[in-house]
Length: 166
Image (cartoon, rainbow, N blue to C red; front, side, top):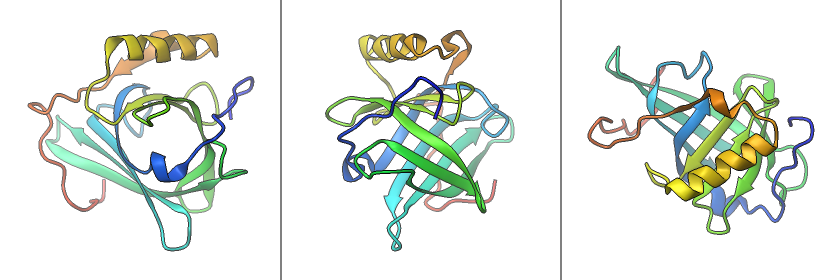
C-alpha cells in the first residue's frame, strides 16, 4: 500500500460486496477513455473475491470488461487486499476511507499513482466527495490529477449481463 497510508479496520467484506460506481480516478492506460465504469465484487467458491470491472468506450461504442480475483493481504477485518487481473501478478488494493453504511469508498492501489473514489450510486453528494478529496489530499495523493467519470444513466448504455473480452 502507499507509504504513510493505513487501510480501514473493522472491514466487513460481506458489506463491501456488490456493485460500485467509479466517481473519480487517477487515469491509467487500462481505463483511459472509459466512462460509466463500475466494479462488482462477489465471493468465489474458493473463498477469494471475484472482481469484474466494466467501462464503456464511447469512441468504440462498446463495453470493455476485465475479470480478476482478490484476496486479503492480511487479516480479513482490514481493508487491504491484493488483486490480480493478469495471472500470478498481484497489486495492492487498500480501502483508505469508507463510510459506516458502505456507500462511499476511497481506494488506493499499490502507490500514489492509483486512486479511486467509489459510490454505490452513480452520483455522490458534493459534501461527501469533498470530504474524500480532502482525505486523499491529506494523504499526499495528486488530487489535482483526478478525472471525473461520466455516470449519467442517459449517457451510459445498459451493461451486458456477462463480461466480454476487452
